[in-house]
Length: 184
Length: 257
Image (cartoon, rainbow over all chains, first blue to last red; front, side, top):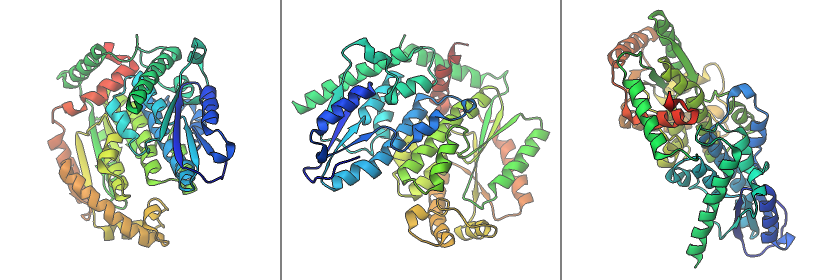
């Protein structure tokens, strides 16, 4: 998080599967650097710790990873997002809730559970989505979706990270459409 | 190809029901030991396990906050007192889910008897005592897996406090110092455990726990647990568990076997 100039506080969510593109969009959304800061995935270091866990501990399921994502988001809200908003600054949450929900939906978790899980997260003032133009983004390695695809137990119906990523992108496109409908 | 289809889910649910209701197979049993710190659960769990082994049961034990994957994450954050109630709750939910998938369900599927030294009710009691919403916390633990038997070791807050502080000071989160704002761990524990016990007592009613008077002698409690277990072990498989088992089967591709 950076920036200190006071202005209109706003939480802007940027979601997508490609971490690099999401960060670029977050910087664009932030505009003037002094306006606020960017809250990024794994600020709490939970996933960093998970990455070095003993392989014998067993691979986590998507559900377990989403509980950890929610814990990390709770940390980001406590230490980055809410304090910045309280100081009158803008915060770009990149990624925010929709990326995690889309990943969960892509592996068959129920929308009701996912929505309830993230109930503690405040509604952003603005939602932005970063969709891949080409299939390049479907092999992303960075970010939460890439991390999850690399490590989670994948059922026999969904065999590759590419398929999960494609489905996550599809869910994010639908979320973007819904967000547009709400705006208009 | 894609996410689990309705046909896959149906197949997994049928496989779960068939497996757990097959009279020719030794059915896995899940027995949970619940209660506040200092209620003597662990002592009783060990005695119970020894007895079960002597009776020929294949027993697997799982403890609260013990998954090899998540426990180190929680431990390091507890050490620096860095957890909010939400983070505390979510991380313990993740630990529980990982153990359900890696330890509990595989053992039950193989017909073993699983003793859980604390179950999801511990999360519910502590998190609600920390001020979190009951429905939200319960949701974290879905798809729910209900034990065949839950033994609840009932003690008063005073007894719990005396037993815990007799040998050591409760740690920061055990004492609930993150929510009581009381500097003295023993005093904080006394306040916090009273809230936790209140929640446990509600849960005992809602979820039909078998209450054991944990103020009785160790021997009397153990004999009572044996009797209650023998009365309860013949209960039919609870279809409430079908979603939890089906999700695990689909995840591992075992619904086809």
